[in-house]
Length: 316
Figure 1 (cartoon, rainbow, N blue to C red):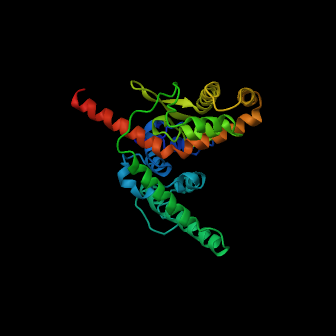
Figure 2 (figure 1 turned 180 degrees about the vertical axis):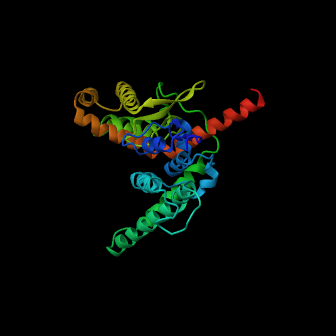
Figure 3 (figure 1 turned 90 degrees about the vertical axis):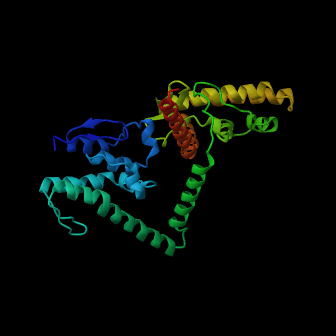
């Protein structure tokens, strides 16, 4: 297989050895995604990485919302290892035979392993339904509807506020600002309000386990990769600054109450900086807020990228 070239579509790592790409993809500590990787599902990225030939995402349409292969990557790699080790040419799932090992690999990856996991999921959902629990399929369908709606919402979009700058808080009225500086979860509640404004969607991140994410840097550099910890630290600093600003401008509350709020903001921020347990808990909350806006944020990045390509082709 040395003549083939494999590229991890998550981070663009390249190798001419199939064993290397398998080990790379199956690592516990996942590699950091480049911006384009957020445009495809985890399963699409995995398939394109494991197959040396160039496969376009459009030909993998059935996997566009799937992470079944990715979440079962250890088992999948084990099956492929068995094919390579024993030089198998017969599928262990459907008994179809192939003339080449690489053809069997592709068959298992694109068909049988995926179908096996789908059946297992369906059987689990049937058991859950019998037990009187909410059917997971119903939830899955609702999620698809939400995703489709999100995709259709952003037909025209301005570039996001650069990550290093303060957010646009024009949609947060004075009454809401007052509520926020006296709320128990003022930092995360404020971020939730901020992310309601699409121009503030300048972060793309998967979850708290991600080593890094993508942020909108500026109109020239566009999107850059940043460590997850740096993203959340920067976010907390900006949230503190914004809460203090709300507090200083507050004219609706008694001065002594405003003073208490000011001290609470500083205390909460210091507790976050100095207490690792609080830090870990808050980090997860912030990551989840960004993750919940991932689809919208990715769509904005796509539109910016498409516009850039159009302008470049037109000679601007």
